[in-house]
Image 1: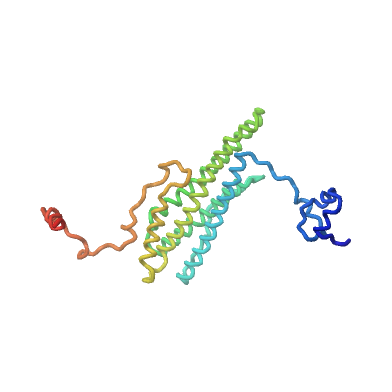
Image 2: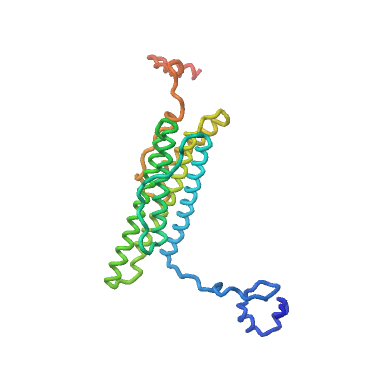
Length: 277
């Protein structure tokens, strides 16, 4: 069969274009498009589309957390040769159901990665000989809580859908459960990002200190630790813990000579009068 130029195709009957689906890129029409190219798109409702969007975002954050954890393991192994630094653990992880959805897989993947991160944090605490900053521990606790909330929303969706099916209720009543599940996954994606930041902070506090860029790194570390206390987008206020002072833990304790002495009576008034002059 001779190949037809795109310009010559217009002289033929317009119905021929329908045979070739009219979408084959010029200049040649030697091969028809794949059969499934024009498969109709799935028609998702508003709540289902929201759930799909939040699933994609949360999975992206989970993959980033997994990548950060592997990078942390490599950095620790390089800086602490001879030490066994691994995130392997024996934490029991629930099995997937018979016909798992993407939400079910996300929950199991999050639980498995959260257990690995916790194990790695414990290894870093032993390497540095001290517990990590309280904001790091609080963030990881909240990460686990958000996973549990997502599990509960998924269970509610399954139970309510089964009840409505037995009662013959219309399917649009499922929208409320789907939106609640999407909101929980949105919060889970936000706290997963914070868990990645917490893991980075723990690594910076564990690595051997170097004088090169120390002030800048400490300022960046303090800022990251402070941001861990900010609420996740869409989170109900008051769920997170209070911010722990950063300077007291990150800066070395002053010696007796460096500590300011007690202010004598009248000294503050005299100093203000001198400064005013």
